Length: 303
Image (cartoon, rainbow, N blue to C red; front, side, top):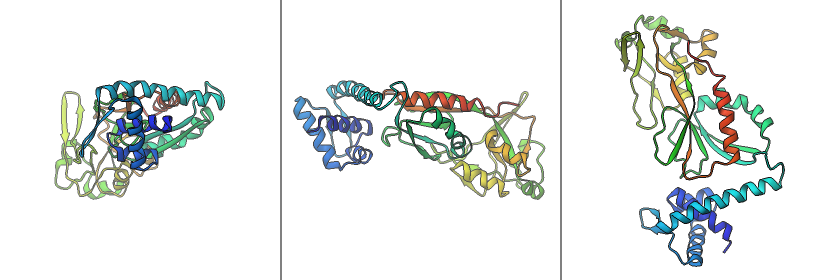
């Protein structure tokens, strides 16, 4: 038995809750992962996992062992990194998942700066607006707009996205320019629906002006669960959009979008970075979090 491989296999099975998922993230066969964990249990003479046909759960002894093994593996990784270069320079692979518009418009253009600062970090970036199983998919962290309430994750607010209401000139020429948000409920108007990944539904948008509050549901003929597709539908004139200003301003500046209801306010959307509560926070993850903090400070603020 390769003890290091066995420890890695055990940790991944605990985090993924499945031998099959653990095998996929370790690039091993399920049989190999199963054998490594069995050999580890035989060596320790302790049952680490409860196995049923439906799920894998950790025993009391296994949970205590897991906590110590995670720290040991993290220390080994950082020790290896220290021998291969500057011990103070973060290095290794960081797996992150980010929303597609934020990746395209904010993260990707700034990556040369990140690479100059941290040349030893390799970023494996998933780009999506879907719900990601951070632990099961072996992701180090996710960036998401909105609150993250998963108990197994630590959610750290890195900033907020300031919102506005926009529409394409072609849409407004066809449907008319609404003077009040409640007019978006009229039959001649459309919105573009944004499907929330957690529920698969289009939620109303709440807008406020002084003491007045309006929750706009609106009628739509197209909805999308991806931010880039949502924006593209609005640019094509398919309806009114609620957008973070960092997404809208490049198009507003060249006249592709016009802002509506400028005297109304929408609550800012929190931008949250979440990572597994059970995992050691590596130097590379700390570096990435600090860099994202700086990026968020460059985005458009409130009016």
